[in-house]
Amino acid sequence: MNSKCEIISVGTELLLGQIVDTNASWLSEKLNNIGLNVYYHQTVGDNFNRLASVFEQAQKRSNIIIVTGGLGPTEDDLTREVAASLFETDLKLDEPTFQEVQSYYTKRNLTMTENNRKQALYFNGGEVFHNKVGMAPGLHFEHKGVLWFFLPGVPKEMKWIANEKVIPFLHDKGLTEGKLFHRILTFQGIGESALETELLDLIQGQTNPTIAPLAGNGYIMIRLTAKANQEARAVELLDDTEQLVHKRVGDYFFDYGDQSLDQQLIHLLTKHEMTLSACESITGGQFASTIIANEGVSQLFKGSIISYTDEMKEEIVGIPHHLLQNEGAVSEACAKSMADNTQRMSGSNLSISFTGVAGPNEVNGYEPGTVFIAINYNGETKCEHYHFSGDRNQIRDEAVQAGLKQLILMLTS
Image 1 (tube, rainbow, N blue to C red):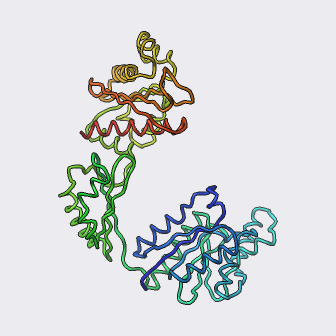
Image 2: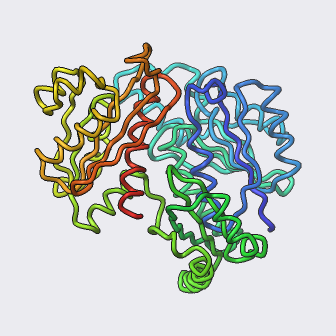
Image 3: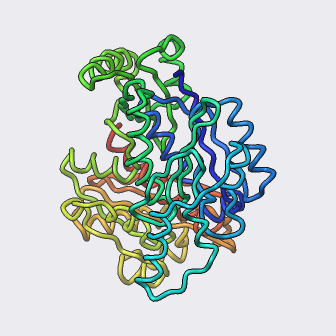
């Protein structure tokens, strides 16, 4: 079978943005990893007619369809009923599942309402995948040569049934077509368009492995994907393609894997055996929190001073009174003094400072979004002036990310 897989996510809450649909992306990755191609994602609310329309469309264009959600006990859980109508079959009670549902309520001294029987219904002529981590089972039905699978919307339950039932089922049917193996290369100091231009002929001529440029958070990634039955063969294919990539853009290669900016910085600090400290005004400790969220940073991060007010800047950090009076707390001079004094107090190789205006009002004539970030690197201090947009928290987030990028570029230039 030439696989054309489709994933349908059911639930009005997904369309309202109340819940983020992580199920579809997880399932796509799982299917791709066993060599099955996902062609379509659809999201539909809890409405009989719209569900019926989506199911009919999927039946016509795909041959493996996985539906998540809508298997609960309430009136708006319509997935079974709509699918049964499409399949022209009826719903029957699965006794083992019904006993599990009853047992759940009995053990908790709760009264089971009649609508909970609904969770034990399955398609007559289909198959039940019992759920060991929840109540609603997974269901399977083959309709006119198309394989349908129905999984609970709860991610934990969906993943268990997919891993333990659906994927083994597809393996047993001989539908998997070899595994996909990925390798991610991370690059710094080159833009996405420039990198793609350098590799354009390789990308256009790709077959196996494939080459996909991806934009990261302040860095660029190349994802190499090889399809093979054995890992050793995939490694050979990936190695050959990686060598071609390195010949073109190897000077910008940073590391393997999809690393966040803070992880990249920690990697560089560890590599160069350097220490870091910070002084934060506008970011209020957010930079330090981002760094210490990573394990094993106690040997390289000495700490951060949160100096939010002018008094704290003067009394704790040692910013001269005349500087605050003449230049203001939001200024290049103040940012540099914060970085210099923090470096002196901490003895770290690098010290970074953040000062600016988060809003809503101007400060010293500077609009909200104005941020100065200074870095003292072994006694030499440089400052960058930024203007970010958004609300207070967005501006603070942007400032932290900009500071991480500034440090990374300093350590890689």
